[in-house]
Length: 362
Ligand SMILES: Cc1ncc(C[n+]2csc(CCOP(=O)(O)OP(=O)(O)O)c2C)c(N)n1
Ligand SMILES: [Mg+2]
Image 1 (cartoon, rainbow, N blue to C red):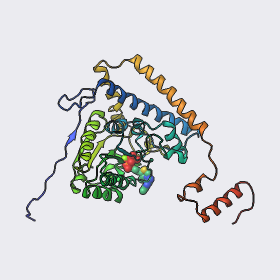
Image 2 (cartoon, helix red, strand yellow):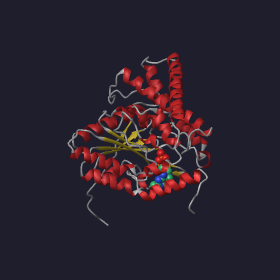
Image 3 (cartoon, protein in one colour):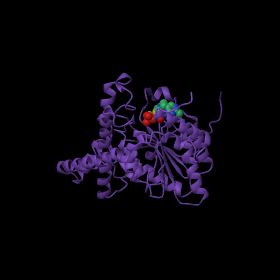
């Protein structure tokens, strides 16, 4: 049908640090040597923590968790752009962002160990708990951002989710609400190509995630998610815009999960070795190391020292996790309601009685 074209769009694609560690000078965000080194250190910490967590899980010392190996740039770059007074609203694959924020690793271990204490991050209160319910955190982020605006606080919210989350109603409601109210929130979709065993092309029919921003009248940008500098720069700009009252942004980070979805699946059942290898070649840690090498900021000796230091740090955190927690068997009943409720207390008593081999009902 011949009709007048009313709307055209294009989606910018940002990359600053290429795979060989070369920086596009025109786009260089100009981070100091010290900051670049800190960023690399945190990315290495996240990677090493992931590997340790996998071993703990296999030894029965940690519950199922979702590894973030391969996605460190997409999590750490944005976190670097945050102010302390901003809010972090994570999904479940942003270990690097939590560590950048100063969340102690033992809190994350507590979470994946199944303890409520893993939802509390003392000292970094403006960090919401890990959200396993896919996309549930997106309306929360929009609500927190609206509150910042309502209270006239100059703080913004950084909200993470995966490509699969964009198929949930919560994604659309959250983006619509944030857009209509010009809430100061930056939405980051870690498009790691898979939602468990569902590949992206079975998840959506759009060419990019970023173009979904067009429907909500907000800026959308696709970023090389294995490029920490591009992730930092795109997020920094979006956060500034949010804090200036110009509303939300959708950032699509193109990345890849190099390990299993969680410790409960075998990815070789649904994706090819060639595909995984192609993404291993784009490893964000290797890229960052090449940048540091090219600026003579790093050496093999420093790498060895870092790995040794990170090991000691992780050992200490595992110790706090394992020694500090003794689960009360009835902890489950503590968190049903904010206040104690008679019916739940009856159930608690029955449960405890059964545990002690006493009288039970039914
Ligand atoms: C509402 C809801 N539905 C289903 C699940 C089970 N589930 C956990 S993760 C996941 C896939 C998420 O994929 P994506 O959003 O791409 O994130 P990724 O795991 O790739 O980081 C599913 C279906 C869930 N946790 N919550
Ligand atoms: Mg995914």
